Image (cartoon, rainbow over all chains, first blue to last red; front, side, top):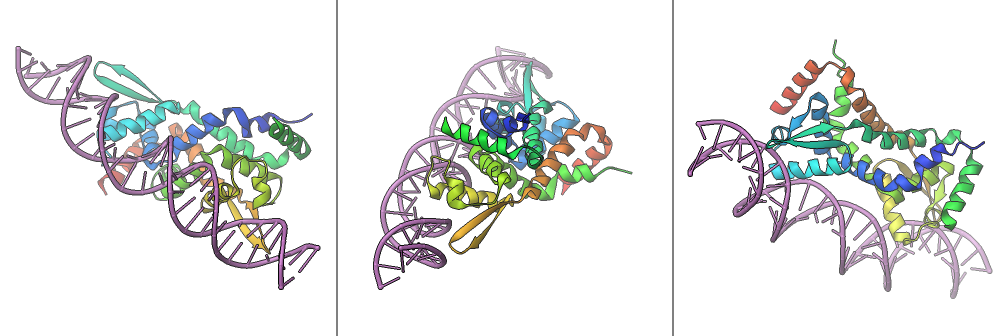
Length: 120
Length: 120
DNA sequence: ATAATCGTCAACCATTTGGTTGAATATTGA
DNA sequence: TCAATATTCAACCAAATGGTTGACGATTAT
């Protein structure tokens, strides 16, 4: 009985999504925006206020966070509200968790899995 | 008594290091290399073997992982051995954990902290 | 109606990233 | 000694990233 759940977490098909989420997290401005949104939903202008960069730059950062699924944006009137979507962090934290526990799994199975993966 | 441990995790000075670690994790090739190194220490050439890209490209990926602290490289003879350093994941996973638990902390303190941070 | 506000778009720029190739540097094996 | 192996370096390239500015389309306030 192989615990290939963690293997699935580490390898293949959600790779593209993980790329995007980790890339979104790799910028301090974006992480700080996420922290701000923990406090409350915010309008784009209010998100931008503490930063020294242009509104357009913030708008781009918010677009990155949105396409990573880390936030959602909803326009009400002329204001676009930004809302945290912390569930999108789950893939990433699952990867890291799986990674940390990897030495506990069946390594023979992992090797077979790798061979199969590579022969495709 | 404020739990500002998590605040410290989310904000400021280790930001630069987090940038680097998350960026290193944002590439599927590099994550796969990390997975391979879970099995065992490996020489650069052996790391490269399963991939379709040049050895030089792998060498660069390994350099990225090294400067993120996620692996270490030690040259013995003409072979450079790559070794996983999973502790470097701790900052990142601490950030994510702190983030996930953020709603449990003192938000007034967080607000004060933010104000202070921004007035510097 | 007109002016102000919210946010994005488009064009541009410099830097970084991920890849290539070919040459160069050790080191080891015959 | 000479050839093969292991790895990096240097130069280059295309694409992506993070920033700018100015104009623009919506929406709201006067």
